[in-house]
Each structure stands twice: as structure tokens, then as C-alpha cells.
Amino acid sequence: MNPDATLISDTKNTWCPGCGNFSIQHAFKNVIEEFEKEGIPREKFVLVSGIGCHAKIVDYFRLNSFYSLHGRTIPVATGIKMANPELKVICFAGDGDLYAEGLDHLIHAAKRNIDITVICHNNRVYGLTTGQYTPTSPYGYRGRSTPEGIHEYPLNIIEMVLGSGATFVARAYSRNIPLLKRIMHDAISHPGFAHIDVLQICATFFNVTSFYDEHVYETSEVNVTQFEMACRTGQQWNYSDPGPIPLGIFYKTIRSSLPEKREQKKVDRMKSIQDILTGHS
Ligand code: SF4
Image 1 (cartoon, rainbow, N blue to C red):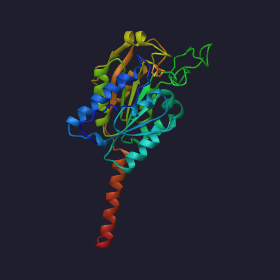
Image 2: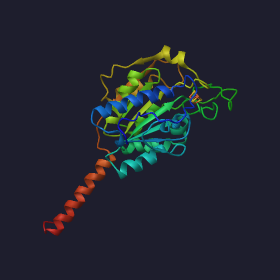
Image 3: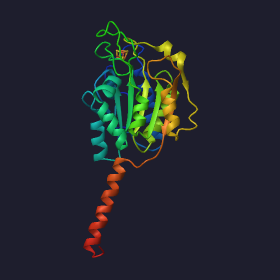
Image 4: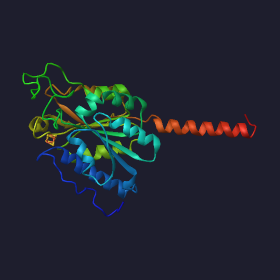
């Protein structure tokens, strides 16, 4: 890949004006440029997307990528990481994609602590299919398929990924680009499963910009290694109540990840074979 080539591809961009996906794309471009300055070449990054408005992001970058099936970003990313642990594998997924159809993959990836980064473009609506409700739409949400409003409460994703064993859990907002960039950089650098829930504005079907602007705040991040504190921060907002809505890194801890365990097993196996061959067993 030509290092001078711009990271943004020539593909025609079809996101709506005002869509929060532009901010996510902009922040991620900056983060890749930062990693390049730190000596990690762009060839080391692989992007995996699901299906939805978010998924077009892989077309808009001149980076190695895999456009997968609805809800299946994590199995594809897991396979890539297991085949080549040297790569930095990043999933871009939507809330309908990841928190509905792909939910079981999310839980098990967090449980395994597979060393990948998941960035969820959480606009709390199915944008590509014109506004149906998702697992994080608020109670009472009226969409085209639910004109009388939904009578179920949203999933608290932060609590769920914490409870599943994720070793890096954060929430960002598409209108706070400096924070988004910092969290993305930290998540990709984290040796283990990293989950970022990005509150992303859908300008066309669920525009809650004023609501978010009024209710988000940045946490101090002083106790990010304390699990109970992270759970309490995650419980502050359940995607339905008014808020306040905490942003930032909620939890970060180090635990051996799946590729590391596999590598250790390989080393142990080689040692056993050598011991047998040299009569040291
Ligand atoms: Fe963005 Fe919503 Fe338009 Fe999709 S429908 S491109 S999420 S503004």
C-alpha cells in the first residue's frame, strides 16, 4: 500500500447530511494516522463491518477490510485474529446488527477476551431500512413498524458487556470527536477484548442531538480498574431514562487473551515434544 495515499477511498459517500457516521470516520482516520506516526503501518489494520449504514465505512477507507454478514462481524474478526495475531482487527457494527442478531457473538467474544476492538455505531434505530426499533431504542419509540410506540425497555449494553467479561468498556459520542479519538486509540492499543458504544446521531430517523448535547458528560476515569464502579457508571443511564449520560472509559483491566493462551499452548506443546525427543521427559 502506498503510504502517501490518503486513507479515504474514492467511493461515493451516500450517508445522509448530518449523519454521525462522518464523525466516526473522521476520528478513525486520525487514529490510524497517529498509529502510523507511532510506527504501526496501515497494513497491520483490518476492518470488518456488518450490514447497515455503518457498514459502508469499510468502503470509504483505503484499508484492508472484510464486508461481512448482518450480525457476523465478530466471528469474522475472531477468525482473522486467530489466523494472524499480529494484525489489529477492528469491527465496525451497528446496534441493530451487533446488539440484536449478533448479540450472542458479542457476549462470547467478551467472555473469551479475544484481542479485537468492537466499535458500535449505536444510533438506536435501523437506519438503512428506514427507522425500525432496535435493542437500544427507548421505551415508547415510534418507528414505521411500531407507530403506536414500543412497550419494551432497551438493553443496557454497558452492563451486559461488563457482565460478559469484556476487559475494556467505553462509551463515546459522535459529536465529541476528541474523546472519540482518544477512546479509539486506547481501545485498539488494549491487549484484549475492547468494546466502544458510540452514541451516533441518525439525522434522518432518530435525531436526538439536542437531547444528547444536554445530557452527556465526561467521567473522571479515575477508577477504571474497579469493576463495581464501572457497573455503577453503566447503570447511570439505561438508554431510556433522561440521563445524565456518562461518556468515557468505564472499565479497563488486563487478563490473558485468547490468542495469547493459544500461543502459550503451542510453546508448551513444542517443549513437551523436545523433552520427549531429547529423553528429558
Ligand atoms: Fe446516517 Fe441515519 Fe442516514 Fe443512515 S439513515 S446514513 S444512520 S443519517
